[in-house]
Length: 428
Ligand SMILES: *Cc1c(COP(=O)(O)O)cnc(C)c1O
Image 1 (spheres, rainbow, N blue to C red):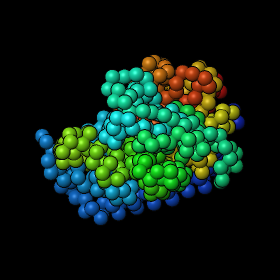
Image 2: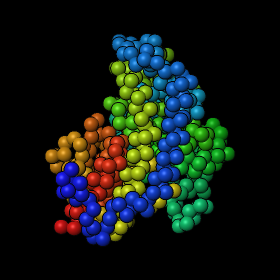
Image 3: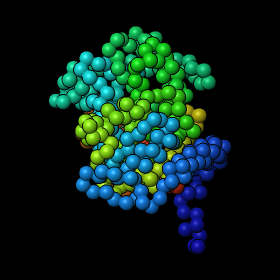
Image 4: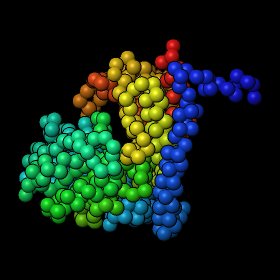
């Protein structure tokens, strides 16, 4: 191999930053992440073995999709992995928001109240709930909404203060109409602590102590397979997430999942399809193979995404930016958030993510309005599956302090490649 090819642009030290030194520093973190991957892989493999997955489950169904054996076995596999009574895994869910919305409409009746305990919900849910008025929203059906912000506080096992559940305020807000309490596990478009399954367990205990009939639901987006346990292992009643994020393993073309208590899942199925038919109807449009094979790859893909996020945050910190997660102990989702402090730096960062992507590398992202989002957003997603954020992707709302939220990475080496280019671009 010619010399210039062998060394490329990587080994040069710029701004006194060496990616390989950062990698050396992260070695033990990466080993820990590998051990998590192995545990989740074993969980997946064992559920495939226990459910006797065979090629027959990969066959396509058509029409009504009655007796779609693959669809039914996927639900079994998911409930085994999450240790829940039931699951509803469907490519007919068009997005994570669609699945969360389904869970709300399925399990809330007029006069019930929905309480978010991790601050305001994810942007795309504002119209679903009716926070931003919209015809057909929960508010239209007289379903009330309230929320409690996280509170900066000292929590055992963290050195400095973190944004954590404000239990006093949660207790005050819970009333006789409170039907669902929701925690969003991942930070979303904010810089804050993302929650571990065990921490969510603390919330579950607290809420059930007040009223054991309240449903504790978790927006689990970006959190799956990040740890060796899931919030359902700590008593959460309903978990929802997208298949073009963690669990799709990069192969799912669309879809989302809901796992949890049997009666709640049945309500969700009645809402997704029709009352009375629920889970028994609906072709999976030849996606059973993708869903199962994607799940098989998911522990490995999430591992690449976690390593990517850790490398990026450490490179950013060495460059003098504030970045999260600071350590792997704080990695409760696959997101890396970097405060870039200027619109130019945010534009440059996101555009460079696009330029170093395998698909649409020549496209130039610009900030624009997005359906469901309140601010102008710049988004890079040079992905095989449109909008899949388990693939390396980055987006940032055009408001101070100009934070780039970066997530995913089917291959760790794409992030490493990006990091080298980013350091170079700042050096010019
Ligand atoms: C991705 C995501 C959702 C759902 O978003 P969709 O784009 O509709 O799939 C909800 N909550 C969080 C925290 C998310 O990251």
